[in-house]
Length: 195
Image (tube, rainbow, N blue to C red):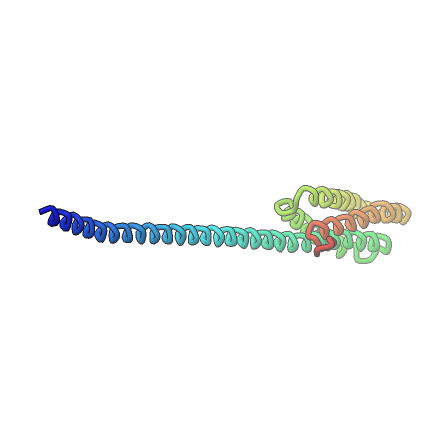
């Protein structure tokens, strides 16, 4: 009977070993599969995060380009309006000197003043404070010139007074408009080395 028990014990150990090996193999396969799935999930999460970073970067770049284009459009209108306003003031000075076309020049002055004020209002909503300080200075000098010219329309001055206005007010306005153009170009990045 001793041999039977030994044979039975060997058989039980053999069956247990076979079943244990299958269980161990299955457990290892499950663990390996779980690790693969975790690695795949981690890789997919990393790819999603990377794609989200790229998307956010692209959105930020699109917004930056949109703001730049908005500023560019605003600055072009602003520069044009300010220069036309200044030119209409000069034209009115010439008309007052000659006595011809004063009414037409006065009408153009009003039109260009309205355009300047509109472009100024738009710039207030778009341009940074560093730009607006120069815009305000140019607008202030043009506004002063407008006030003086309106007085000249009600009581025309002599040629010496007009010459003094042209030498002082108009020259100062041209200087400020040149500064304005330089500031606008700088804000747009036109005059920077990487432009």
